Amino acid sequence: MTPQLTISNLEVSYGKVPAVTGASLDILPGELRVILGANGAGKTTILKTILGLLKPARGSITFEGHDLLVLKPHQIHRLGIASVPEGRQLWATLSVQDNLRLGGWLLKSDEVETRIKAMFERFPRLAERRNQIAGSLSGGEQQMVAIARALVSRPKLLLMDEPSLGLAPIVVKDVFRLVREINETGVSILMVEQNAKQALNVAGWAYLLEVGSIVASGNAQTLAKTDRVKAVFLGGEA
Ligand code: ATP
Image (cartoon, rainbow, N blue to C red):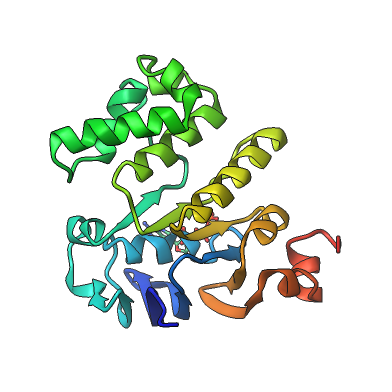
């Protein structure tokens, strides 16, 4: 099968400071892949580059045959790529409903309302809180808004930056269940995570990123059993 997204030899720097130093990865349509990496490994940098927010020094990124490096962020979004950013980045003083509305900024207004309605059916907890300001929601509810906001645009590929960050363990479980359910609806997902155990449980394929380079990749279950992943990410657990 032809990959939906292909990243080849990507190099990205902040000024003279290299952040990604030759990463290659891809994702097939409908897959759920995870990039594991410690703080500062370059995970967010890769996602921001896919979204067109950073321009690489070298390498290529293609999505369904389109060269993303010549496109602006809104054009990339229009191709069907949406993101759930690190830290959720909601408009804290706006209502849940208005946050979702902003997820549909490229859609026609009647289509936005239809999609918001669909999101409220999918997430009844958000429907109950539609007029509540986002900043007053619990961490898990805020993550749900961030995910629903990304889904408003009906993406083909969802980029998720540490969706479990800062959430209580029980909520983390819910978030990963949700990630799996979204993927089961046919949306491809490229997720970056530090919570390796849960991420390897839901992902089919995983990449290990260390100081800007992919140092290992493979079937998530197989990778979870390697000494490197056990030692670095699973605290010695099997
Ligand atoms: P985390 O898990 O902490 O979010 P990450 O794997 O997502 O880490 P990145 O945020 O991609 O890592 O950062 C990769 C490297 O680039 C780090 O060394 C970081 O300090 C550096 N970096 C990130 N953003 C900037 C910036 N705006 N200016 C300069 N350096 C940056």
